[in-house]
Image (tube, rainbow, N blue to C red; front, side, top):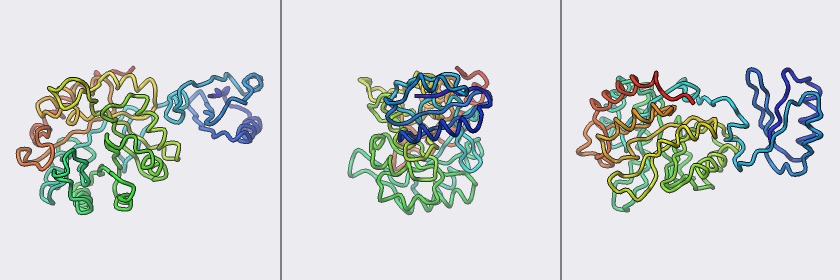
Length: 335
């Protein structure tokens, strides 16, 4: 349920209304815009008397919200959320690119890639320290050492770092990480999501391989329900019957999600396609469709990458993609 207040509500009446609502064990999400103030009621609102609230002088309207996600819902928070990552803003008109290798392999590799992507215009550095792999025999990442090398690259370039957590036990290692990524396979690891709700860091939540948009939003709700409102959604392709690409990039999800949620949305064309030469057209398309950013894999030697070399761009290719994306941004869909 949402309560839309009239302009400049009388403070005492507002305090009395909030106290009464809280007495019914309801949580209140307070959203103040330039001309509209909204109280979002979270919890069991079945006993709330809508007519009584409507009769209050300070109330413009009361509406029931059918969607099960509340904190994530744009009805509760009409303005776009802007996530600030060490001065780098994502959302609300601020478009950012997160770039770097699929996995951290060495000090030279991550530092070289960090320098090159920064030169091309990326403002955040990605790199996997813990790698969820389909095969138990594949490279699993450098783990704690990988995070240390990412922090070295951050110190060298100033780029905030984004890396994936796979398990609750790993969280102590992420104290200095700027953005914690939840991978597609962990999108519905609810115990992990609940714990991340208590973490004071932005969370980049990737859509599961076979998940609906509602399921993605409900997973984001788990994080926000714990108190962490700094969530970034990531469309990274879903599994369909098509086998020509690694996944099927759901570009329609971008403008559709924009109608449902205030959270920023970035797109990962690398994992979506699995093919390096498809990254550029899909990156352009995602930017044109209104995405708030991109997440692109870049490797200084893709042919010898320990993980996902086939979808990784060289620094030169990434520079070309950045030029193309920047050219289309002024014409991006705004809704």
